[in-house]
Image (cartoon, rainbow, N blue to C red):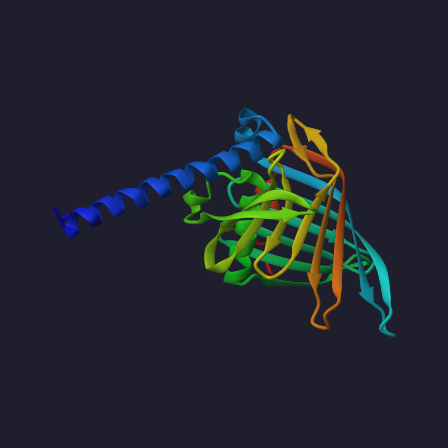
Length: 255
């Protein structure tokens, strides 16, 4: 007796649905293990803001084309749901980049003369990237579907000779954070962005029951094929502070 085609179609749909549910459950388990390695669910759920202070170290080319090391004092604030503020202070410039929901701005100022400054509004693309970055720092891998994103399971991988699970977190307009989670511990070991930047975390500090990296190292390819490395060492990490709205709101162009 031949099975009607429509019955085969129903069976196929059921099989595909079962596979999809199993795959989703498997991804949920990877994320649950990763979160457990960072902190308790109570601590992660209660997180409303992060405040980092430290030093950014990288290299820049001088007038003769020679690479010179530079250090910049850095302060980074993330506040739920979509607020961010980064202040980078060097000898020659103070640069502030901020996000307030769907608005973003950047201000550059001469540290020796407060009357010398300029401010620009960020583009839609820049704002979307800052929103994705804010979510990534506050949500610890869970809930991207609530911002119309999704997680793609890219299967097994190897990082530093050890087996890992590879998940891609897709945000708006092709913004993707691909994260590798160690099979043995479940913890994050490597992050890649869609534009080729790799990010590693080193050391750790436990603040209010949550583990944070003390050092972040990002590496990117330059047009000439060489690599540029940026390291941020955090001296202080604080959570769940309350910040004034004025830190994020777009300033008047007259001041």
